[in-house]
Image (tube, rainbow, N blue to C red; front, top):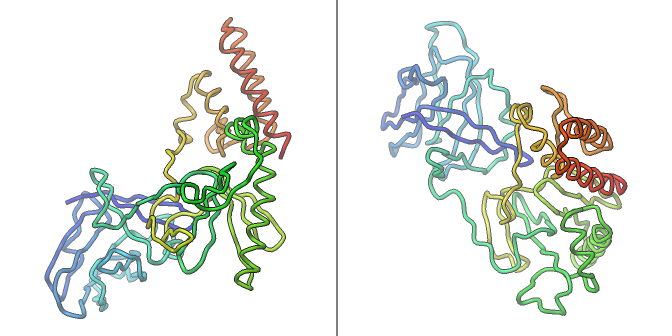
Length: 346
């Protein structure tokens, strides 16, 4: 049966591949017999109770072989580059989940986060009970701080405003004296004045953790699905890659999520490069209004978050004026002013 699987890579990246899924109780497996013409990839589920399995890889090359534990966690990888036809090639394994992917596939096993699971996307069903998500009150909402406390273990520290000491309903850390206007501006512009206050507060949280633990702490401020600031020593570095997956815990070390996003808010609508090539002027304007990480102006050519997008909006404004669309013109001017305000803080 052919299914779509997803492999989770480092920094939250993922790749999907279609594979034929087969199960067997054999202890010596002639792998070539399990492939089907409809797919070059194979997911092999080994169901016998013996310790070792012999994999006969004759005529199966060049392939990357991924080994998964019975709980679907990634454990190891191997390569079969023996392309000499009919030359016998056998290996032994103790793993019960084995995935075969052609070696020309554009990724390396070194990119896979160890102990992350393989996901079956067929019918949006996750293979086995790999995911766990039970966000409790106050957690999973932007902004928040992530403190890595162990291998693939992340502690989330929510950031709240004006809680008046109500840490039962607002666990984490709090910034007092924030006006409603500051909050409103921050909701549409994550580089507004409140952002600077949050950065300063995170530095204070970092120093407090270091004083309490008597060791250096590395934290990350997360303000959105693609907005992260990593604190390392005295430096603060922006990244569009936010912490993802692993085991997410509260400050009391209670597990609230495993192998999922660290937030509950829906991701903003995004467009692939090919999708962006077919957008109308109205859709281009609304896409620019979201200030995406990449704004494509032609295949494989994109503009980052900078003033070049203002020039792009000026060009769109000319088209709108030629069409006599005053509503669209007003919207373009509004988005242009919004982005100018954002980029002035960069």
